[in-house]
Image (tube, rainbow, N blue to C red; front, side):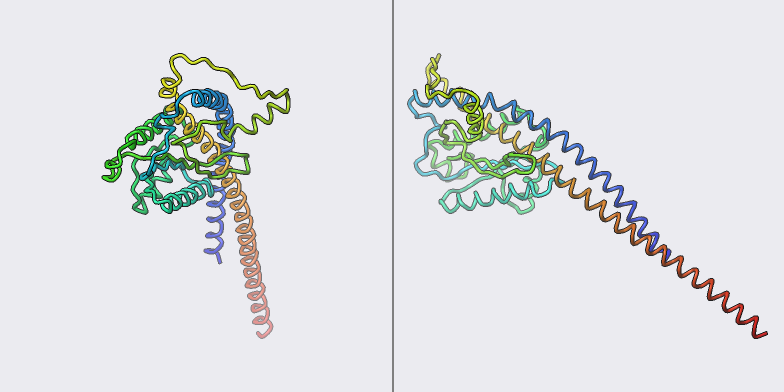
Length: 320
């Protein structure tokens, strides 16, 4: 009985210590959510304006740029997967990896050969454990990505896409050339809703993308709307500007996806740590009840032994 009580008390101390860790992780994730949301909001004006400019460029230029041109027979296609570097984030990584597998299956059913580019240690570990080849990986910045990180990823993907242009023989030999660029990440919609999504980045159609539809609705709700498009004058030519801005546009989309994923990761971690902290508290209460019951049983047994011994002494004295 004493050994069982000591074991219960040891488990209670361990559970309460673990609860403190979970609570600390919850507080850290909560603080990071605010910063991540602010970074997402701060990045939207630039992304919105470069999208508008590229829409105007694409409408005024001959659409023969490699990033805008569909390949005749797409073979190898690149899939960029954005996961987290750390765990304790609930189903965050599971959901984005499941969405990736769905995309890979769809691409294979279309006769394409998908190749993986992975951001985050969790995705890298997942595919390495399953002996799935990865062309390139990036780690160490999933919670606080910088634009330079997005540029490094975007540069690699754009080089691969450019290498795949008019290079069917190279693709057949497995050279790092691809005909399409896809991205899978987690879209942050609210503190309670984070949805894994898959989108094609190239060949791309520059347009007012879905991310800004709600902003247009908010803007038109408070002001008079107009159908008159913005007029631009380009210097140098529209084609030259396309060459310069389209790679930046790809990097901007990757950066926006990284920011959305960072906010989603923190929100998922906060929710998971809150649940784990509550479960640890409930477990500690249950263990405390068991310990109290064991202690009460021990006291009752000791009292019974004392009473039994006294009764035995009394009975022995009366016989004499």
